[in-house]
Image (cartoon, rainbow, N blue to C red; front, side, top):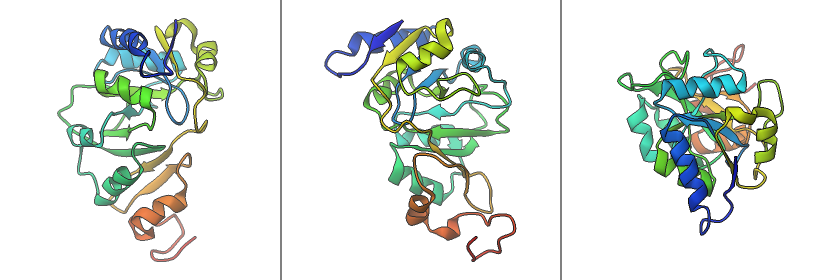
Length: 224
């Protein structure tokens, strides 16, 4: 069912429905600043598997985790490089996903993560309101694998149908493009693994070119 989620003054019942769905291990669709996301409780392995199944994706492509606050990072990640923290502080909430080493003590199963987790704080009032009530959600783009990303609740429902218990409709996605993904797990430096809502130029402006690992075939200290 699609629930309206446009106005903080009236979206209470819609958020209640989404929170209830998350708490019982169901899958929800939520608006974000980039594209619509499909997600579930990050600490419920069965629910995370249902998200991947809805998308038609296997464990080899684990979903990112959306969080409500930068302060949540240290509870989920370890050994976060200073450059990655600088990007989070400058660009969150926003269209940046950062891959970091996960805390080994966490009781979750996001898929074949190899000890990492991709974190993002979305710049969307409704998404943040939901996350503040549910805690971290495992969220990936609300579309079937290989199909266009959903930029509206109707787009998402057309692709995911009854696999989702609650659709939150916050209108069209402001950006309509996926987040930029930066891998911060390599000791050699940061790596941009997907271009998206934040430009490479903006990343370099914040942390400097030296914070990034040399690209293959490019000598350190030079640009390719």
